[in-house]
Each structure stands twice: as C-alpha cells, then as structure tokens.
Length: 456
Image (cartoon, rainbow, N blue to C red; front, top):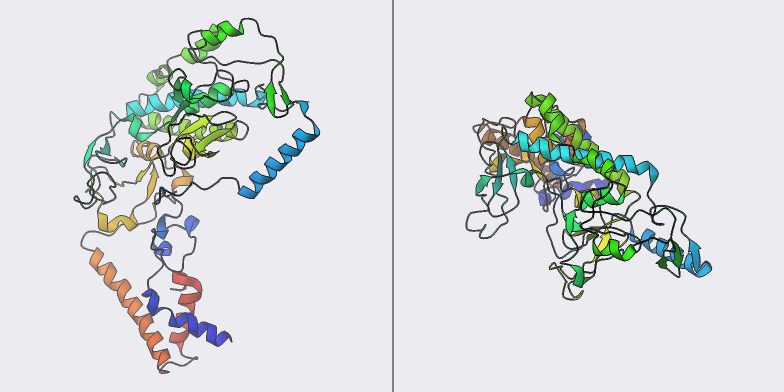
C-alpha cells in the first residue's frame, strides 16, 4: 500500500512540471512556510507580506471567527433578558476612560506627530516616487520597472508604472472617520449629519476617545458610569449646559493645561538634537514602532470598525449610518457600510514597497522580482536614511538573498531546468521499469517529494 502511494506521488511530478519550491532558495529561515509547489495565485516567497485582495467583490476576512461572534451575541442577549436594567461596570463601555490606556494614548498621539515631522525632513534627502495612475510607491531616485500597475489603461502600457514625485501622504496613510463628541450617549452619525460632523484621522479619534484632549475636537468626559436598559444606554448624570455644549461642541476650547502639552511644536526636539540624518531616521523608526504598539493596546479595549468591502473606518461602539459605500453589493445595503471588526492595517496603512539595496544603482527589473524583498514605506525610508534594519522585517526585506546580475539570469534558469529534467527522467524510467526500487535515483525522488526542495 505504501508502495502504491509513493508511486502515485511520483507519477504526478510531470503534471506539475517538476517546478522547484522557490520559497526555500530565495527566503530566510524565518519564513520558510513549506509549499511543495508554487501557487498560481501568488508568489510563495512573499507569504509573510499581506497581499491585497485580488477580488474586490469578496468580503474582508473576519479577525474574530464567526462562531465566536455568534457566541458573544447570544451571551449579551441572555444578559439583557436576565437583567433588563443594569449598571455597566467595565470601561470604556460605561462611558468612563480606561486609566491604564490614557498614558498610552498620549504617547501614540505624540509618536504620530514625530513621525509626520520626521518624514517631512527625511523626504528632503531620500526621494520618493509614486505612480500617476495607481497607489504604488517606490523609495529611490528612479522608479522600478516591475509591471504591477492596475490603474487606468494599464493594459496599453503592459502594467508599467508612470512615476512622479511623492510626498508624506504617499509614505504613510491615516484613513479618516467621523468625530464623536459623546461616544456612549450618541454613538452613531446618521446620514443627515454627514456634513456637520467633522472627519479627522481615525488614529487621532482613537486617541481622543482614549483620553487625549485636542483643541477644537472636545469629547464628553463622564465621572459616573451609564446604565443599560433593555440594550439602550441611559445616562442619569446631570450635566449643566448640555444643550449649549452640543451647540458649540466644535468651537469650544478644552483645558489649557492639557492642551499646552499637545501644542508644543513636534519639531522642537528634532531641531535641537537631530542634526544627523541617521539619528533622525532612527528616532522616526522608533516612533513608528511606538505608535503601532500603542494602537494595538488601545484597540484591545476600544472598538474600531471597518467596512467589509471598502477602506472606510469608524472609531466607536458602532459604525456610522452614512450611506457612502460604493463598493461591491452596496445596492443591496442602500449604500450603508458592512461593518466588521477592524485590524491595525485598517487603521494605519503600512503601504508595502520594494526594498532597494542601492539608491544609486540600476532600477529593479521585472524579471528579477522574485529576488527582491518588501517592507512598509516608513521602514524602507528610514532604513535608506541610515537607520538599522528592524529584526522583524529582515526576512521580509530578503536581506539574505543576492539578486543575480543581468548576465547571470539565463545561467540560473538553465541550471534549475537541468536538475528538473533529471528528476523527470528518473520518473519516466521508473514507469518503464528501468529504475528499480533499490536504485539511488529512486530515493532522490522520494526525498524531493517528501521534503520539497529541502531534500536537495
């Protein structure tokens, strides 16, 4: 029985064209997720890089399994039936702040300001290119030659990018959402309020709801928890001048003592110390990791929602009701978004770019793209400015891969093709019984099948 299964696997080698697993040869040990044969839908080398959705009609994957979401909904429904009127105890659902996340929110807000300031200075030394027809970004003096353009009339250009000078908004992108004055009392923006409610970066709104006070965007701070009566939030806390606050909620200043901390020029520390480009890039990269780590901690407590079909995000207990979705199946939803739990990539777009080893070298070639690595645009820009390569991105950037020269590509293809032909010859000889079970060539084929390219 074991013989038949082995012979069946060997007989399938010619059907799969005897292709090698390139993930072993051209990736580091940290990302060797074994694929016996490359997938036609994507290059297995970049299994550690989040790939964009190829089919925009499909919904984004749920971060939390659907069974877990159904279980939570049933528990909440049973709790409402058993206790129709109850006092919410745990923040931030009860309207109060989470004490241990207030300082984290301030550090995230400060890190975001430092990142924007640092990137604006780094762009004076490191050029950034952006495609005129799509969202592709490249860090370097000249754009790459990799044909991945999906913009208008890309077919007539053979998917070649048309490059122009980029800016800070191309390196890092913060999607916007509606600002909520009272995240518990009025947790949704309806369609008629789409012009009156301001839109600010979602990461800034997350910091405001977590405890950061920003001028012109006040937020209601409670001192007592709210009640839940049959699923509806009721606030019995008496606040003087509520109507006046709501009328002028976007034009009233907050406490000056807290605003002064955030009014400080983010360039003040940089102007005093960052005379060296390497120090500037290192500090910007450290701020990036501080911001990402802080956002993850805050998102564990504060809800952030994203549409399952478009990039729209909303920070708060619920998603808004503005009918502005134009993605797939929006007609059946009357333009409403299909809200689901958001991830860190929905709140802070990493914008992966190709890693360039030498800014002054030749542009990246399309036929050598299997040897190139990727990294977030912020990380790539800081690394090109002199910052050390972060350990978590060494595998993704393919630093252990030496791309072949322009005159060495054909030689590499011939060597791989010759080894594949040898394996196919052994398979054909086994079919004609010219190679027996005790032949060494047979065990080489078994090693190739069972371990992939690791056997070679």
